[in-house]
Image 1 (spheres, rainbow, N blue to C red):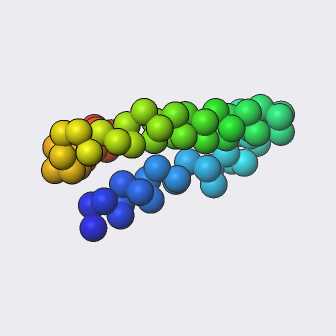
Image 2: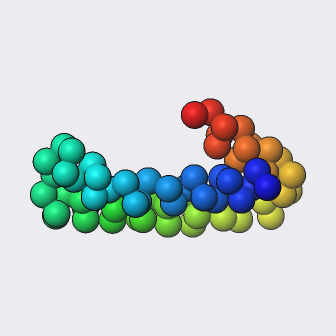
Amino acid sequence: MIQLLLLFAAGAPSPLYPLYQTEWGFRPTAVTLVFALYAFGLLAALIVTGSLSDHIGPRPVLIASFLVGSRR
């Protein structure tokens, strides 16, 4: 259940981008750039840390992800 909530929270900001655009006066290209940076950052994180559980085991990786995800 917690993992499902973390996965939901990872994609939660994207529906808010149009609201940020109207509230903060961003141009459509700025919103596109923000979303692209989010996607590339996510991809980079998956590439860098994707095989981490193969090296140190899945349990420490899950515990660390829960701790990082709950820091908000």
